[in-house]
Length: 375
Image (cartoon, rainbow, N blue to C red; front, top):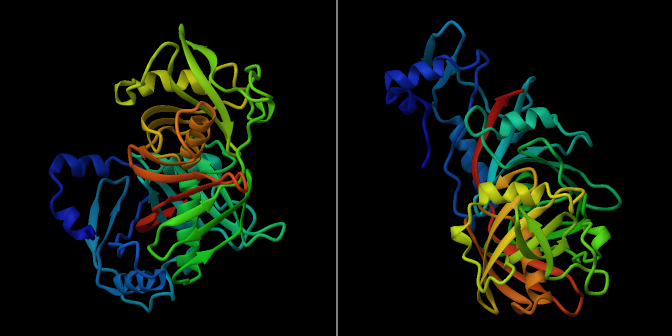
């Protein structure tokens, strides 16, 4: 549903208006539009976005003097694309989500340096005083022969090696930027190495996530290897409780547990994730901190997980986490190599192919809105 600034202003109660007027003096502008279905060609969505920007609109500005004005902007010829706008001091972005794991996507193809700092990313990701997101993703020039480079700042300002849901959003964003339609495939350089997303005909994105890393020192974890050089169903004491954990890296570290020692089938919905998650993330056995997945087994091909992400906390989905879960399930004999993994935001299809040892993730990525913000 498109949101018009004028209608929002007209329905604000006086208490809400006063809260807005007490906000920082620097104005905050957004342009919202209704994205077309995921199956629609990216070019047609950009044309709709351009048409939307040509339509008469209202802008709202709030100042330190506690005055609000609603006015129609002056008509002018719009740029060829919303993202081509280059006003000084403004960041133009597209908000995307992959199963509710949401990101601010920034066109950074003209520079190898991110357009915002980690400190600015924290403010942008704030869900009360910013745009609201789990991270900021930058589409940058490719290196080492790749088509593009992807970097990401988490909502706490840290920089992870890669993000599975983020790379699906990244692929859809590139298709929009380049006006590409139909099935498309890119090579993307990330901190976790080469990642290859492919947009399918139905708009979903399949990502070749590469091979899982199982060597304990490379995950990294200080837990002692118990199978070859890997940590599989090893004991980890957290806050007085002993958990069975398997450690996997998908270019970023994951600690996967199917339950505490002696527990038959973990009921993930009963977990107090906000309490237990940080204790795993900052455990001394994980020198680079860790993402943690709590997993419930429905069948050998159907798993359910909740995740506490390093640097982001509880999120609705984690693509690398879902991949790590299937690897751990196979290693522990809990499931087969092809699984549906239910996350709070929806399902992902994960396959760990035996022929090449690569993991393939398939799921959606959708645009939420286009916007501009002063930086």
